Image (cartoon, rainbow, N blue to C red; front, side):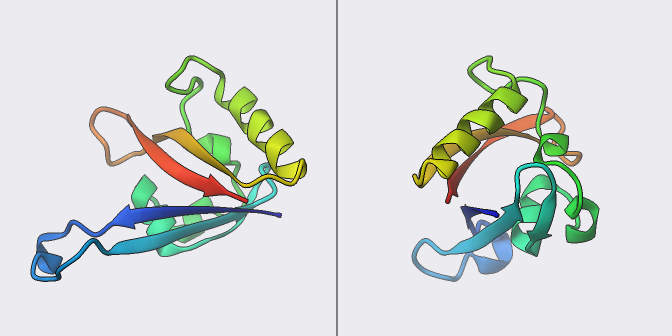
Length: 112
């Protein structure tokens, strides 16, 4: 299993009174073929509920091509090669979200 962790900054107006940078830890567990676990912070960052993401492929939440023009499936395979080689890596992943009018944004993730 592969664990994907993102730190999502809290930027809600309801939390403006809180000092410091504070983050939600967004966590996804996958074998890179299907998602077995995802917490509400990760699902919410993509505009989905946890139940909508479980059992689906991570590629269901990405456009066909990543920001640098590489196929999302090829980028996934590169990440798998690094992870199975025993490395922890940081990945900038282009994500698709149903709540974003422009369609895509970038998400920085640590994969281990």
